[in-house]
Image 1: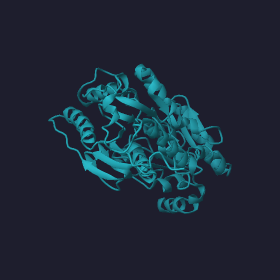
Image 2: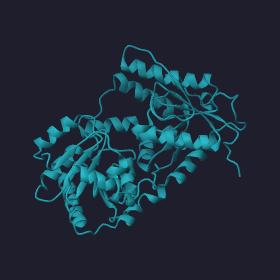
Image 3: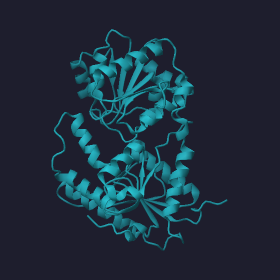
Image 4: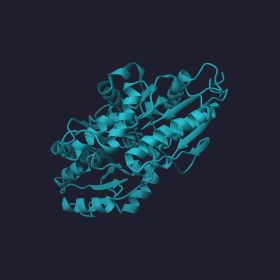
Amino acid sequence: MSSPLADGPRIGFLIDRWEPERGGAEGALALFARHLELCGAEVLVFAKKIHGRNAGRSRIVSSGGFTRAAREASLGNALVEAALEADCDLTVGVRHLPQVDLYWPHGGSYRSSWAASREAGGRKPMVPATGRHRVFLELEDLLLGRGGARSIICVSDLVRAELERDYPPCVSRLHTIENGVDTARFHPRERDHAGSALRKELGLRGGVPLILFSAMQPVLKGLPQLFEALKSLRAKPWFLLAAGLKHPRRWRRMARKAGLGPDRVEVRGWQDPVALSSAADLCVHPTWRDSSSQVVLECLSSGTPVITTERAGAASAVYSAVCGNVLEDPGDVDALAAAIEHWIELIRAGAVDRLRVRGGATPRDLPTWLERLEREVVELLPSSSPSGHSPRGNEAGGQQA
């Protein structure tokens, strides 16, 4: 039976930067675009910055303005206009747009994300928004509160709950599709290959548990609390690899300030995620907020247990104590230290069942995930597809910012 996309509808992907190698929303969008192409759709990418592998045709979209806020508002409108001019049948976007058919906010509610960032940094609760924050909130309200998005995909139940709370008018348009993971690529067999090579590079002895922390926003994802927890466990054998950080030197200084020298902590920028997840004995992700952490899913798929918090959208994948721990409070350093100590003992005793840990990720394999996303697109397409139609989002009552 042929795909409903076989007639070649024109689908526009709208994003500020198209950089699939970054992973996260960019990587997920690229996987989805490639899947739609294979089903027969014509994919067009509209972005201000395009780098790395592309799906379909791409178009650079420029924006103007003297301030960051003005440029962000201008870009959102310019992306929508570019898709209109290209006569797309349907548009897909992930952030900072005034209007789109299928909205896929990987970061969840910007309002909730901003509040959590302030809490993690020890700052006061949200103050009246200014600058780019005001623009982002206005665009989010256009999409969610005022009907600018026809359908909204939530990457976790956590995101769905946030959006229901922050923008009640959008409730009927919400659909939960939890993030997927490449379970063939992230597999326990890589522990003897990519994982072993990274451990050798780090100079780790066989019996030393490797703890992984990986995030682009280390404060929000709980690295200061992890340093504090490990400080109390210096008598135990462990080595921490903190990866994906934008400013490694700054975090090396913070580790030393916490009494954790280079013999216990290695801080790096981007690393191959397969090597990270398969080299680690334990992933620790004590986040203050994460819509659906990909590193959690990748580690579970690789057979690496995870310690995270209830504020992680992917926490539901830690389905039992055999997979790890889900902590209630990201600020509870004592509870974090106790959980890490417990897993260090299990790891040293060889009591980790890698295949059962992997069970937390296997229901989220890529084919299942992509098929669910495809169904959302098909539901939104005009009845007589290929081009000749302007984006249906333009008919939904969304307003320009």
